[in-house]
Length: 162
Length: 295
Image (tube, rainbow over all chains, first blue to last red; front, side, top):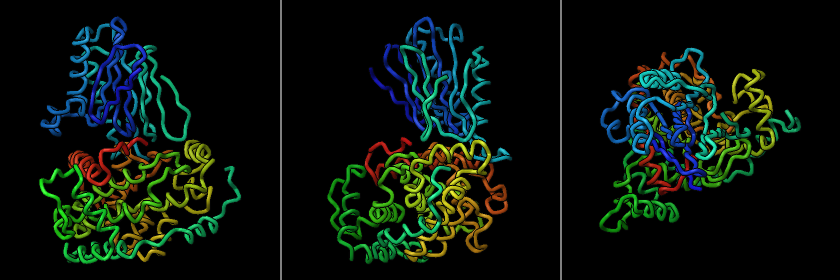
């Protein structure tokens, strides 16, 4: 059983049962998790910001950093592992996108990330079947390859699943 | 709340058992707080403290810099590292008793308070450039590292009450985590940190930040641009996932910040990005490449 730890802006895919894809302390970042039922492959990208136009150089070095480059790159990476490079047979779950307590939503990068991600998923005709997003907590995520279960944790609370 | 026996007085009395800041550290903070200071001033203070000198030389000769020749001169080491790294070394050395431990009352791991403080420092130093207090750039950095000082003191009084603190914020009994701390202890990490800063005779600017970083509108007018900068720097650090634990992102943004910080959403995004790169670099210089950002 191997833990594949994805850092900020990183993406990865795996298909060995028992392995786990993990990412830590999401804050307003969002983990986009794509599960491919046929090949039993799971992919995850730790998205930091919505659009790559903020820094095209960063986007070419670390495409997972932005929603608009991260999701297509993840789908391609999963394609190399035998998955269709379209939305067919895939399940998407989202975790993260928290915000500080800001009634005016000035600083709501989490929400902007979420909107950008859904727009890109829509292009692939991918709908989100489960999400644990928003609120004021910074989440860590572990995707279990064998079961497809997604465990979420944050300091001071019991772990939960989506 | 379960821990009704703790009083504000008991929490504040805890400050008597906190070691004093080493003299060299107070002097370095005092000097770096003065906009006209020079690196030579810092070098003169550091050379009077053998342990501090050893720390500085260890960092400059560490693998993070891959220097072809060993640096044995303190003055060269200081000019090579730059003042932000030097302040970071001075603080990591003098605050280790308070910062290098898990905070049970926040359910946070060892290293989280440092990582959060450093990221806040780097963000605050950039944000202050968007205020009328541009001359506070160095102070903003130091203040960023120190702003949550009080958490290391009050944490043990909150041990066992983490879930109640979280629930009180979630069910609206407390307005935010700071309010929850006050309900439980009669005080909060801002007040306790500011009292410690007073005991350590830290400059007024740093004390104001420590006291009002969650309520910048209440800070003394002179220091308000600085306090707002650290307030936003703290928020950016939390949004990047680096809170200190169970309090997570449960703090209020002061909606009056645009009166003091003139920053657009795009500028904020660019800044976020720059801060993250600088953070990864500085963290590896100060602490090596150990994993310190898991909450």
